[in-house]
Every structure is written in structure tokens, then in C-alpha cells.
Length: 243
Image 1 (cartoon, rainbow, N blue to C red):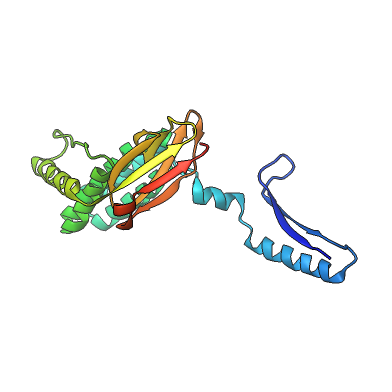
Image 2: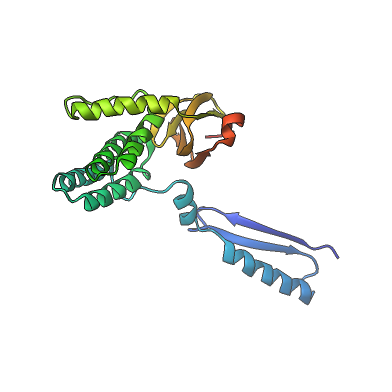
């Protein structure tokens, strides 16, 4: 007797409000062994089934706050910074960055992230943590090498330090990132910052990045990238058949 095992997952149809997994067993339906095995298999699959909410949280987490609310949260963090409550300011800034990461690229999250990273850098600097302060600014330059600081807003010393870090980032080891899609012309976003269109190729410092593609009204799932020393030789290439 030949027995065939399989699973079928139904995602978000009119008939199913949530993903539903069906287990199919083919064979003699009077066979107790087949029935017991099918039931055990179904139970095992059910335990490991992933909900639609979990899938969205992993690949396309929905915003919990708006960009405007995040801007006000950064205002609060800045007030805490000026008041000298650095730990609280860092905590608020970290919450803001977590919220910014959930925004759609169409909400222009990079502007908020740039502001949050600079505020984080200033807090660390005032707390005597120079390396952490520099790392926050280097993160900006890793994504946006041509970024400039507003000389009317930041002190000359801060602007000068930022320019010095630009040189460090420019000299840092980088991995080549190439992105292709079908169709071509999809907008490529790294950490919410627009960096080009497919077919895309660029060099970026080693580290973790969040990749999203957009084409018209279509938006890809967010993909976490890790550019490592291995990619210095091989490069990191990703192709998307559909956006």
C-alpha cells in the first residue's frame, strides 16, 4: 500500500479568517495504522504551524506608532538629553529607533532614523562614551555616504568630527551588494533609506542591514542582510523574481 503525506496551508481567504493547515493522507481509510499516523502527523504540523500575525511580524512588521508620533518621541528624548538624564534619553531613543524600523519606506523613515542616530551619538558623547558615539554616526555614513550635518544646528566641533568619521567609513572594508528584481526598476531601500533602483550594485561596510524593495504600490517583505568578511571576496547577491 502506498501512503502519501502532505500539508496544505491556506492564507487569508474569505473562507478562512486565519491561516489553516490541512493534512491529507492517501491510502486505505479503514487502515487503523494509517489513521493513527495521519492524526499524529496532523498534531505535529499543528504545533509548528506559524500564524499570519507571526509571519507579518517577521517579514513585514506593522507600525505601532506613526511617523509624527515618533518625531514627538524624539523631541522628548532631546528634552531628556538637555536635562542631563542620559540613561532615560538613550532608552527613549532606542524605543524610537525600534518604532522607526517598523515604518514603511514610503513614510520616509530614514529622516527620522538619521535624527535618532545623531541624537544617540550626542547622548553617548556627553556620557563619555566616545566609541558608541562614533558608531552611531558611522551608521549614518554607512547608509548615506554623502550625508551632511546642518551647520546651523550642530556645533562646528560636531560637524568637524562627522567629517573625520566620513573618512574612516570611506576607508573601511566593504562588501559588494547586488540586487536584481523582475521587473527591473524597483526602488531599493536599506534601513528605510533609498539607495537606488534595480538592477542595483553598491559597496557597503560590513554589518547588518534591513532591505526592502518597492515597485509602484507593491512592497516586498523586509529582509535582514548581514554583510560579512566572506562577502568581501564573493559579494552578496540577491534576486527577486517578483516584487
